[in-house]
Image (spheres, rainbow, N blue to C red):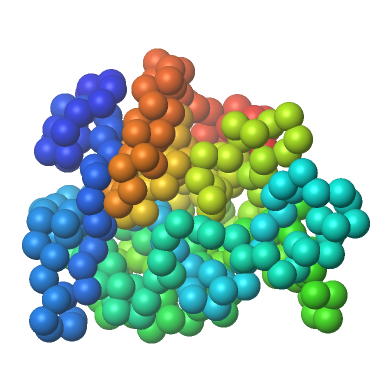
Length: 287
């Protein structure tokens, strides 16, 4: 029986604690690209071989996505002025886009430490790069998150991006998931700071809790260990803990580490959803 509550990385690995959030880098780019050594900052490199069950993670997206991000924040401007300037204003995501070497380094570490599923979010245009970065794992499928309430295409000269990719891979050999024969599609509204709800979003690229609950429900089992190399606001961790799993999050920004820890500490871990993975789970409203 695993302990409830927060602990060290080592305690979570052996089942003496339920979760931890580590301040540091998930991966370095020194594995395949000589001359770069980040040492202790490479947290995944400290984990033993085959020590985790799943890696579910939402890394930064491509440089193209960062370049094209537009803010929907209103800065007190009148409606007409706000609309006119919105297409010109870049939104600062406060972190750099991911590079192919970082993708490859993450895949190298995942393939060493992970026993079962590796699920990674990306913009649709970059999912082939994740597939190409795999060497030991078998590519299985590209699932999709349909982003209800996403921003329109402000230029108006092309369709907006309506969904994001989830590249699914698995260690070679027997595989299993809990979704039966259904498709790998997930439709959930984005997390947005609406008027009067400024506390809704804790991170610039935060995923909705319902989405991560549905994804973790489909691919993990109670008691298993889930790792997220890009913890952010901790939504993957919330889903893991609510479903009776253990969780290790890794985050490079200290303010996000503290927000995630506070979020996890507020959870009632005596009340998880793992008992309802069958009929009762299907009755839950996850949105």
